[in-house]
Length: 345
Length: 260
Image 1 (cartoon, rainbow over the protein chains, first blue to last red):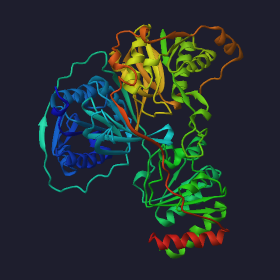
Image 2 (cartoon, rainbow over the protein chains, first blue to last red; image 1 turned 60 degrees about the vertical axis):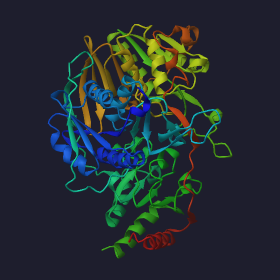
Image 3 (cartoon, each protein chain N blue to C red; image 1 turned 90 degrees about the vertical axis):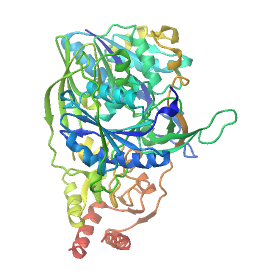
Image 4 (cartoon, rainbow over the protein chains, first blue to last red; image 1 turned 120 degrees about the horizontal axis):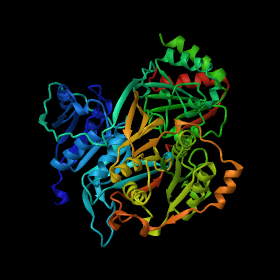
């Protein structure tokens, strides 16, 4: 069958414990834009057990249709039944684009599905747009239109590549959480609901879940913060992070950190910004004692205002900072906190 | 028990990144290492070898130079090394890489296949799960602990909000997180032995049940439309100031931008 018979933008609407993950809404926001360019609609694939109640929420965030696969085998995420469901939907409904979150679930599900339906998969995309491939016409080579152009960082964030999947369908991408914008929910929006069940027959690939351990974290989500006070190796110790916490408290911000800080055990992994941590784009990002290796800046350079304090004037963080101060953070930070206390009440 | 660990030789992007004067990556100047997640996977295999007894084979696909990581793995304690190298395999995306490695694995007896979660050059985390699909065996990704019980493997599988303890019957594929363990060092005796040992070298003809249309650049469904070294955001102001002046400077900027 011809590639042009594949229609529509599909999104894997990830849910955990029957609660939709933020990435589901982010993907719907991006899917809506892509669908507009392609003059098609957005379909959410909702998999789980007793998940029908989540349909309206998906509609409010931009889904025109929701395909619900509701089955006890899908209660908790396991690769095989989930891959079977998504691959079956693809074979049945033939979408042209399938987006999956680059989460601990999506990065397992995406490759397994792409291998099953024999198509390409681009990982951890940060930009998705519709365009031509090749981007510039090459004599003697067909230029295909309306292709999904998927942009992603590689080499630890040192390079960016734009990738197309011109000869296979669907075009599949996993998308980095925190990068795409969800739409403002449309109250009362309704989606067309399609109930679908491909049938689940357990086989050797159905693994057994012996135990589920939730690691309840009392840390805040740094991806939601408007102001981040982020510390690096230069802060010197776990105790010195108190100084950053004081600054964050007075300005209504949240403390985050670089990888070195996590490696030293000063701060938990959930607070790590960067290539192997989280991507953040707050209004203000204080980079305090952070040298700014590219793995770090890859996760924060989209911040609106970057203020860096570092004693090393050659630190690469100054290459991305809007305001760079070469100075002693141990003196500057407490005084800044005091100065802010006087004006922020 | 027979374990195959898939490993990759990668440029050392952590700290060792070098740029040309024009701002592009100077790949030639960058050191190569065994991919960290793969090394953790190898260590996990070697611990199983120590605890329950296993024959550990390391498998890589790459340029002839990738022989180096196999020897490093053997110096750590792996029993056999297999290098898949062939001009026609070059330029492979994750799909074509996984079909190649699956083609090699069909020639090998295994109970357990371990791959790293992801390589630090591509960061895709796709090849492990894709191999498992081609071989039609279960996959458990993101392992932070691995143990073997009878004919099953029990894995602590990391998620964003905790972990699941998951049991699968072997043969099975597990992808390892570098948090899994602290890999051992090569031993002097091991290094000596590793350079005495033969590394098996396979080419295209040695891959089993793989179609040419699924190999190399031509067999890769994803195509690079554009690649560029990252254009970094331009530097703003940089000032060297004493503490009091610095505070005044920052306060002025925060006011100017209506943050306070």
